[in-house]
Amino acid sequence: MDWNNPEEVRAYRREWKKKHKEKSAADCRKYYERHKDKEKARHALYHQEHREEVLLKMKARHAKNREKELADHKRYHDENIEKERQYRIAHTELLRRKTVEAKYGLTPKEHDALLIRQNNLCAFQHCSKTINLSSDIDHDYKTGKVRGILCRGHNVALGTFEKLNPECLIDAYQYIRGCPPL
Ligand SMILES: [Zn+2]
Image 1 (tube, helix red, strand yellow):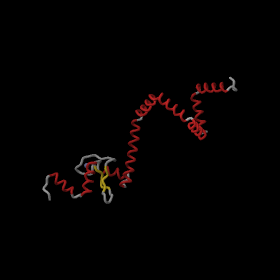
Image 2 (spheres, helix red, strand yellow):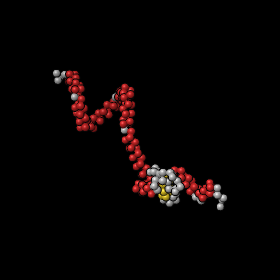
Image 3 (cartoon, rainbow, N blue to C red):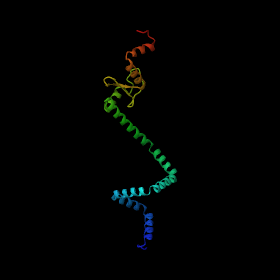
Image 4 (spheres, protein in one colour):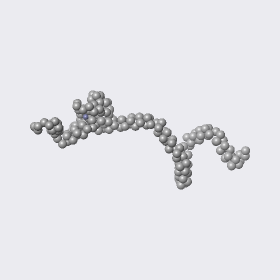
C-alpha cells in the first residue's frame, strides 16, 4: 500500500474500521472523551454551516427507520411498563407527601400515623369508605389545624356546611330523617 496516496490510506482505514468495529468504536469514544470540548465545538460549527443538509439527512434517516424506531419505543415501553409504573407511583407519592406537609404542616410520619389511627377509613364513624395517602385532609378553616382524613364526598359536604353555617348540619340530619323542626 502506498502511504503517500491519501485515497489508498482512506480506503485502508475504512476497511480496518469495518473489520475492527468494536475496537474502532472504543477508540472513537476514548478520543471523544479526551477532546470533548473541541469535538463539541466542531460539531456545533458543522451543524451551523450545514443546517439544511443535516436536517434533511436526519429526516431521511427517521423516515427510513420509522417502523423500527416505533417498534423499539414500543418494545422498550412494554418491557419497562411495570418499572415505569412503579417510578410514577413512587414519585407521585413523594410529591403528595411534600404538598401535604407544605399545605397542612403534616409530616409524612404524622400522615402515616393518622391513617393508621383511622384504620384507613373515613374519619366519620358511620362511613365505611377507605382512605389513603391521596385522600382529602380535613382541617379547620380558621385555625388551619388538621382534624382528620375524610372520604371525598364527606369532605366536600362538610366544607359546604362549614362555610355556610355548621348549625345547618343538625337541620340537615333532622330534615332527611323527617323529624319535626325544633
Ligand atoms: Zn366518608
